[in-house]
Amino acid sequence: MHNFRKLNVYCVAKQIVKEIYLLLEQFPQNERFVLADQLRRAVISIPSNIAEGLGRGTDKDRAHFMQIAYGSLMEVLAQIDIACDIGYLPQEEFERMEKLIVQETKLLQGMINKFKTQKSTASITSDLQ
Picture 1 (cartoon, rainbow, N blue to C red):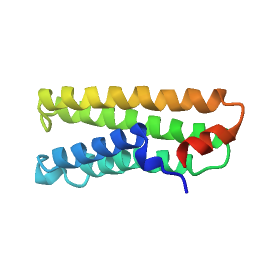
Picture 2: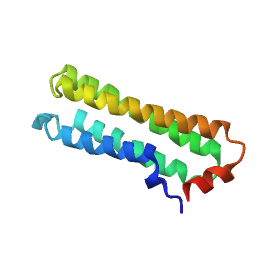
Picture 3: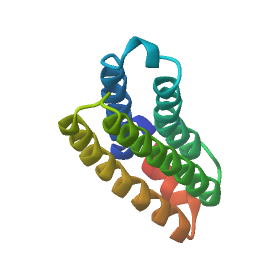
């Protein structure tokens, strides 16, 4: 079994999920089913796709799922930017989350680059066990 839970890219993704869920508790009640719901789906997709990708058999598949996670991360950034603009999220909280998102962006891009340039899946598989 792959031990993706020890990888920094996965741990930071989980931290983002936790932080977003805590921030959503501050959203107005009438927003619980539109922007908040979309944000929940997007943020949970990040660690989910990382885990699924690392469970795949080829580096091409792994890179693909990391790219999906990256896309979901960008969706989260856009949604918290909108939440900040409409007053659901204080600017300071947006900036704090943006720093965490930038960190995760770098980690995901590193994984994508690693899988795209990997010549053999053996070394990646052994790194994850």
